Image (tube, rainbow, N blue to C red):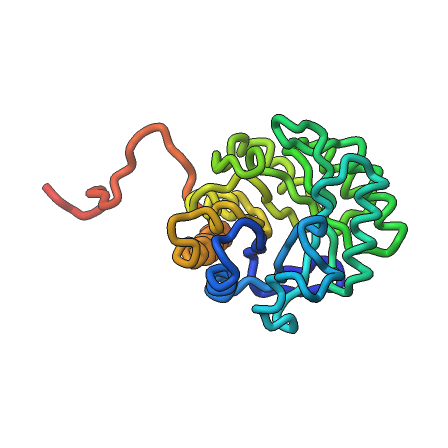
Length: 255
């Protein structure tokens, strides 16, 4: 079971809802993923206009917790305003703080992220800040009271997978709140690797929505999360420089 603030989840796969070919494929992908958490960019939704297309109309809302993100914000104040919009629309259980500091790399702004996290915690939100794989920054966010830490595996939408597993492992090892690997995932191998390192969950969007078959990829990601988590819990063997026979001959009394 995964505990984030007051919420408990069985699934460790969080799914984004953007960029799917259409709402029907999106719904199928969401269903097959068995996710319990859906994330979306508040600024890209017509949350107050009932006559506009809305992916939520296709879903049984009682099955999910919603994690709106503050994409589009450049400052802490903008992020707080966006979070309050989501809260007012009554589709906000948690909030993902996303404040981009570099338009070329889409890497998050650490200073504004810290500031927004503190402000939203004071407002009573369940706060999950999206950050780079900065080990010290993760410590500061947890110290503020963040309910989970969401380090990126690689730049948003790049599909490069985990480019710095050492830093990611450092963040996981030091953290006393859940670590959710977010951004840059490209394939089920990336998901399994993140979970094998000890991540508590994975959040992804483009890797599913932009796949040739989003529904099949969604199922693949679900299975990768499960396999990676089991592998982490089982404990992998130590790596060795030299070969070690899997069927040793010693002790068999052979001449």
